[in-house]
Amino acid sequence: MSLVHLRTFIEVYRQRSISGAARGLGLTQPAVSQHIAALEAAVGRQLFLRSVHGMAPTPAADELAADIGDRLDLAEAALGAARARSSEMAGAVRLVGHADFLSEVIAPLLIPLLMAQMKVRLQAGDRDDVIHNLAEGHCDLGLSGYPIQDRRLRTELVREEPVIAVAAPAIAARLRTAPDLATALAAEPLLAYNLERMLVDGWLAHNGLQGVTPNPAVIGQDFRGLRRLLCAGFGWTAMPAYLCRAEIARGDLEEIPGPVGPTANAYYMVWAAGALRHPRIAHVRQTLMAELRRGV
Image (spheres, rainbow, N blue to C red):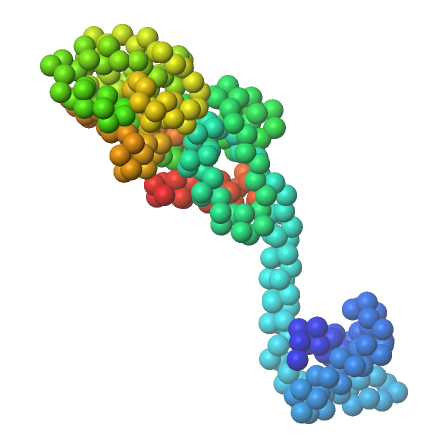
């Protein structure tokens, strides 16, 4: 017994006609007759009495129709809605954000979406790129480590990450044992994320080390490049903890303890007004936000 056979039965029952049911279902009359015969064989009872006046339902048909008629309509409506949602989910969702955050944090969270055959396009960019691509419709969702004030866009805080100072073990040991941390930091090469908003500035101010004037030896917009230099034994920096937890666990890097402790960096989900009308974009946004807030 199949859903197709049951739908054919209901149509014949309502039409009282093989030919009428065939027209309504877009089937041939022999196909409709075969469906009814298969259903009668499955239930073990005759469902219709055939005559020149049409198909007269038997008491068994009345019982079956009463049991499944409305339920079948509801089931088919639910299947239709599911197919519509599946169609709406087809296609790609375009994400723009800081390269290291997309790579280290967002990429692992995409696995369930990708397993559900959703397509994702990742584009690296700074704050201005996030604003431009979302406002112009080139991307659907953005991830930013900077607060964005633009009336065309909507933002929501999704994660706060500790920012810690780190260096290779030999440098970290030298800094920990220095008589004056500020003086020792100033003597070591500094690696900075960018000049617009060096996270190290906030870490120094939070720890009362304003005497250190940042003069970076290296400035880059991808912390992973700076991390490679640190692991090679060059310089120090302040970076989000998610970027160096594994390296600290392996002993490649060590935290430089500040007098007060870590600061925090906020991350925001960003989207254009009206973007969430599309179910695909809304679904990806909700999925990522839930995972980011869990701190996965």
